[in-house]
Image (cartoon, rainbow, N blue to C red):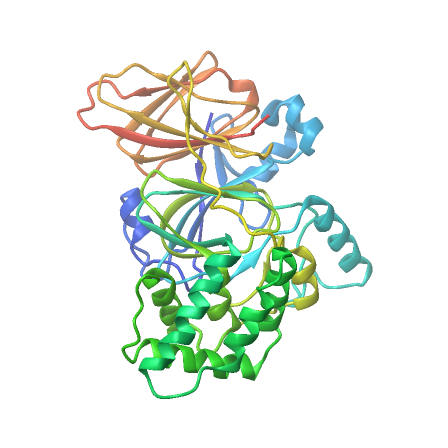
Length: 415
């Protein structure tokens, strides 16, 4: 077992307080958006190696003996790298609208951009690696997000409501609303969503002007009910990104509010944006993101349109499973990862760590004691560890004499 230190990413949308408060440490004074827990080469965790006292990047440690650290099955399936990346994510402001490619798209796109000589750090590069990036997020606080295309009739109802709202304010209905309604009136819902999305993402100043008119109507006393969450999202997104096509694109998407303990999973092609909240995010180890609005960064419209799944979907909620060993597992339909929530009352029985290959653990409340036939390690709030595949089986105990409950999260593969 290796205690690890993790890298904090200071993206501008991050909360200045949430991660520090969760982990019980001082605030840095700037935005703290994501804490990366894993071996991604951009920001690998650093392992404290007890054998020689060194501090070694986790990707370098794994490379010393992939089968020992990852397990033969994981190496055979995913290669000699840790296949998942865990994060503590704290959004104080909206993230960009984005979508992640399938594995086939990522491999083809990465090879194509390499062959074209696109620099790895070029701002117009779409594919930073050759992997896909399915992901999930478990809410630790109330968590707001946009996630996948909503049912087309619901979107038509919202657009019609906005058009009718212009009756109560001065001004004409922007022609764009009628065109979007026309895009969505056919029987082929996927084609209609693609047409509406493409109209918005490619509309330039006409979309910006229509967005300004819509927002002006909404803040001038037009009724928001029964679509208050969706329309307040339009208003707030426009405050941050005035005239951005993502403001009206949000109306095409499911607007979701997660309570603490609820989770969603996001497959390839799902357009989404996290809006606000603190959560545990887990993904395949990749940094491939195609952006679709709510950002000043590069947007490759053609590549984006070829990556999005334009079918309407129900919100992909992910309910936990409770095993016969009292393990609480979140198991999305991806092989790269699963998430275990470990809640220990003082004096309670240990919980077996669900481990298939390597695992990482982070403690967010109290103290835990990790015990295996090959070693042990105590972690306090804010502490984290990397467990080699060869370490299994591992049990997670409450610390003897502790009077406070403990809460930890563990990630391993879904094999």
